Amino acid sequence: MATKEIAGNTIDVNEEGYLTNFGQWNEAIAEAIAIEEGIEKLSERHWVVLKYLQDFYKENGTMPTIRKMKKSGVVDTKELYSLFPGGPLKKSSRIAGLKKPESCI
View 1: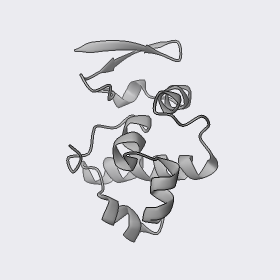
View 2: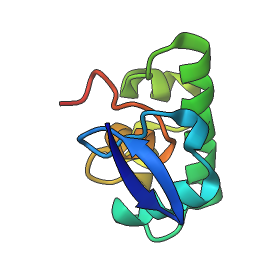
View 3: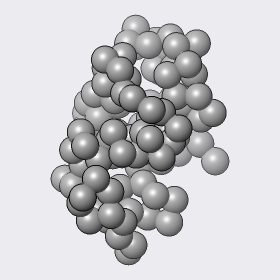
View 4: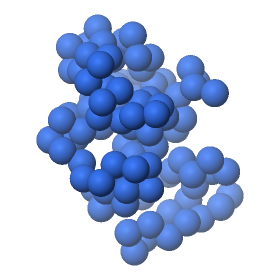
């Protein structure tokens, strides 16, 4: 298992940079990962999506698909792509401290 220094914390990550121990996640780590992903500042809307992903994962043990995200009423597809351009589920999941969605290659 690899480790990485993020926001002054040494965290466990897999080969793609996703946290392998959610217990190590915090908001400072999320902000640092967001910058790595090309998102300069996480807005309130970003946090709503990140919280939804974390809650969904805790309740279901899996990541939602983009279709489920749209149906949730939390965020529509257009806004999701706007908030997390170039791979919205991959980026948002990584920032949220969760595993890579199975629907993403």
